[in-house]
Image (cartoon, rainbow over all chains, first blue to last red; front, top):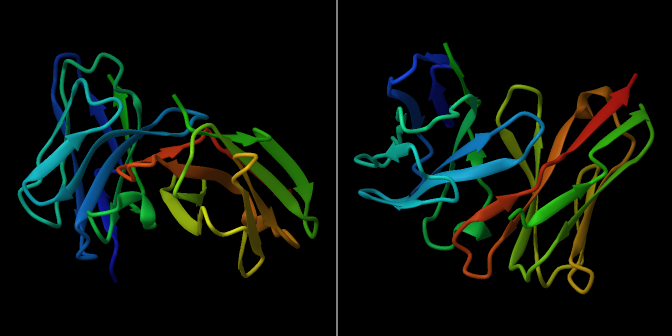
Amino acid sequence: DGGITQSPKYLFRKEGQNVTLSCEQNLNHDAMYWYRQDPGQGLRLIYYSQIVNDFQKGDIAEGYSVSREKKESFPLTVTSAQKNPTAFYLCASSIDGGQISNQPQHFGDGTRLSIL
Amino acid sequence: SQQGEEDPQALSIQEGENATMNCSYKTSINNLQWYRQNSGRGLVHLILIRSNEREKHSGRLRVTLDTSKKSSSLLITASRAADTASYFCATDSTSGSRLTFGEGTQLTVNP
């Protein structure tokens, strides 16, 4: 069954700690994305990757880092520099990295990150 | 700044009624997409409408696009309790490099 798997579902971060959120897809999609969603709000783009070994900053990249070493994986690290990390994080993918806005995005079920 | 803005923020209707949600945007677009999000879950793509299209249907969903008014609407006919969710519009930039999501309409369908 093809799809996007995000893990863990819930994550807690201590002060000064980096944490990594996992995103894996078996859809053979070229493009992958990370979004942040705060309560009652829309999605804001953190980073996106149109092809393996390449990624671009989104609108709120400060305090986050990503890697795209494999087509199926796009992990997000929330660093200690991100002072307000409590949010719902969503990973998505789309089939073609060329014209991103021309395609539907497929989403995982999210990771909820909280501060201890 | 957010490109798409949904209206109303919240909508409560009875089962069987129609639900209409609106999306307005500020700058020219190539495409507009509608998504649905159940509580605590990821988004699910519903419909993509291109700037040269005026209307699109998918089952009980009807989407319209008026580029002169920079607005779109999503109509759900004969609503069901299972339609309870948040609905988001997403617009692209003319470069096509990303989508920008609105803040969503929270729809509640009462049985």
